[in-house]
Length: 238
Image 1 (cartoon, rainbow, N blue to C red):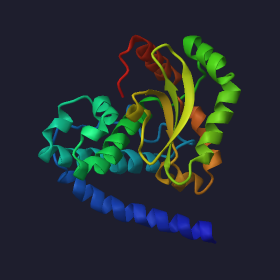
Image 2: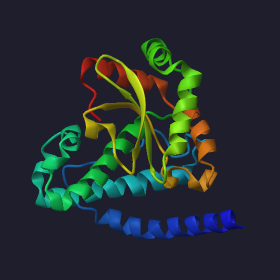
Image 3: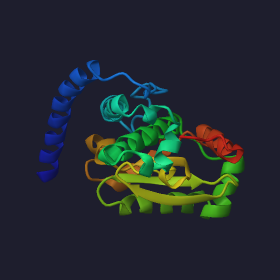
Image 4: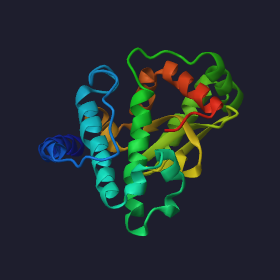
């Protein structure tokens, strides 16, 4: 009964949020930060991630981070004059009054920009240099996925789990709370999964483990390979 009631509450809350988000989007402040459209249809990742979740997640949650950053940039134009990864790697230089807001919203913008790109329909498996790195650094594909999913389950509340990549191609699994990102440590994310409830609750409710397992079916390994090559070349930013 609790799960059913919670599901009805979240769906109702999402509908209400959608009404206000639609109004907010029409009045969202313009500025230097922009959100790219999804590179596939909202329903393209079904049945693993449903279309309604994708619409809310991309069109409301991510859009809100972008709108908030443009609001910050009105009074602090320097935020939009530096690359995103440089701002996040030097948060101490952000005015203290907005530092937490920038941490949360610019971190969320960076994380989600990566997230939409490294997913896609069709699934697949890693190959070539990425697979070799997984075998070398993370004990092989099966162990990597098991360890990554376990790390995602250990995130208390909201956060992300990432595979980071260094310029020499070394991989590691790390988790971050809230909208924190490896970019804040000067590192780069090869891929990452969002374990905030809004990323999965309409379809999976409290079954985060099922979501984490299903998510591997929508990882775009071609894009991951491109990111790996960019990291090795020193050109991977967000």
